[in-house]
Image (cartoon, rainbow, N blue to C red):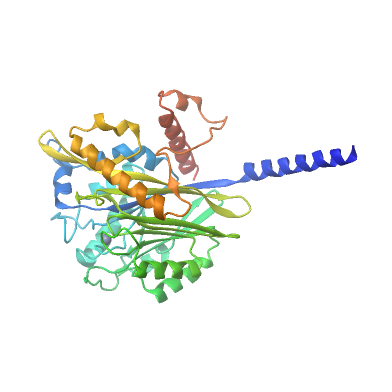
Length: 405
Ligand SMILES: [Zn+2]
C-alpha cells in the first residue's frame, strides 16, 4: 500500500513539475527568408501608372500572413536603396517602396551584407540604412559609420526574457570596395572572432549568424561553406542561416547532449526575376526558441515558396506563393505551365531535403498554436478557415507584445 502511495506521489510531483515548466516556458518564433532581389523587370512591374508610384505589396501578399505571424521575420535585402536611377543587374538600386512592402507584410529585420552591398558605392550603403531606419525596420550587416557599427552590428532580438543575437556577413562585394566611415561585414575569421567575443558577454540565449556565401546554382554546400560552418559551431554560434546560391541547399540540425547546432546552407531566392528551374523558388525556414531553464530550438520546419510571374492588365506581375497550400492549386493559375513549374520546383526541393536534411521536415505553411482562454474570441470568428483564425491570433499576440513595449 505504502509503495503504491509513493508511486502516485512521485507521478503527481512529476506532473506538477511538468506543469510548472510548461507554464513558465517562454517562446520566440523566427522566420528566415532568402534573397529579395530587384531585377529590372521587377522594378518595371512595381510601377503603378495610375497612382504614379511604385508599389511592391502584391509580391508579398500571398505569404504576408505567414510572415506576419512570427515574432521576428528576417530576410536578405540584396539590393541597395540608393535612390534613382533605379536599375537591376548588375548594380542594383530599387525604389524605397520595396522596403516599405517588406515592412507592411511582416518583415521585421533586413540583413544587408551581400555581394551587392556596394553596388551604388558608399552613398548607396548610407542611404539604404537611412531608408530602413526611417521605416523602423531593424537591420545589420552594413554600416554608415563606426558609431553605427558599434551599436548595430550585434542586433539583439528580445521577447519577454528571451534574448537572441543576430550577426551578418558576406563573402565579398563583387570587387567593389567601400571606404571609411562606411563598413560592410566581410567573412573574415578574425573580425568574426572579435564579434563573437563581444556577443558572448551579452547574456544571449541563442546566437544566429546570417551569412552570404556559397557557389551560385549549386544544390550542395561547397568546402568554403562547410569550413566556415564548422568555425561557427566551434565558436559558439547556435544557428547559421545562409543565402546567395539562388537555389536551396540542405539544412542540418545536430543535437549532442545539451549542445544544439542548426545550419540552413541556402534559402534560395525569396523573389527575383530568375525564371529557370530551381532559381524560381526558395524556402522559408521557421523555428522557435523556447526558454524554460535553458533555451532550445523547437518546431524546426521549412516552407517552400515559388515566384509566380504572370501577365495581367497589360503588364507583368510577381507574387510569392506558398507551394504546399491548396489555395494555390492548379485552378489558381491562368497558365498550366506555371503550375507545372511550381510543382517541378517543389518536388525538386522536397527530394533534395528528404535526402540531405538532418532532422528538419516540411511544415504546414500555417503554424501550430495553442489558443489561450484570455484571448479575444472574436478573432476566431472572422472566417471559417482554420489557418486564418490561427494567423489572426498570432498577429494579435505580436501586436499586443509590441504595444506593451
Ligand atoms: Zn548574392
